[in-house]
Image (cartoon, rainbow, N blue to C red; front, side, top):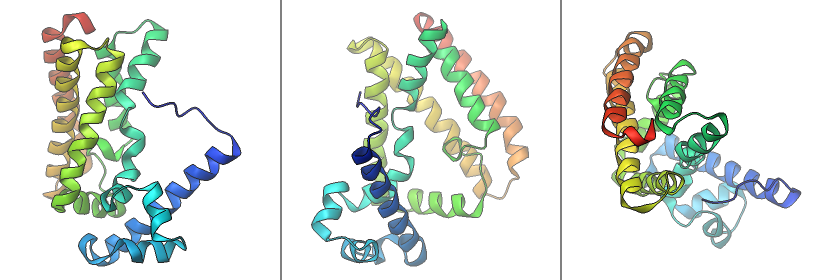
Length: 208
């Protein structure tokens, strides 16, 4: 897993640059459409050169996905922290996912704020972003598998866990986009998450 513990002046400056450029890019993409805005236009708006932008973001799609980059290794971090409490991986991940519902975390699909809706409409509605999102999910699986011990069994478990989280979130988002109220979706979402994690625990007894 990447070491993200550095908090010195240089690291803080780098993080601010990532966030500021990503926010500028997302604002332009939402105003005019992802495909209608060039990388050169984003660089100009951020007052940096195009080569500098590419040093921070290898692709145009990464400008968008940076907004959810903190979640990429989230499951792995949850498992590591839970071990210190003596809590098993699956109970910890279930607890964390349900806490995300309570907090209306956008990655759970339970958030209908207009800005969140616009961002996820762009994300799921742009084929190149959807394709890039698969790489994000693969990295999430890899990070989780690593803290679960590595090897094939850990990879299989991580793939199932990440898939469950993704499908639950996508179902919540689908219903909200269809016009259902967040609170109406929340009740079913919590019950569905409980069922899904119960199935995972039954199939992965070593992670209880």
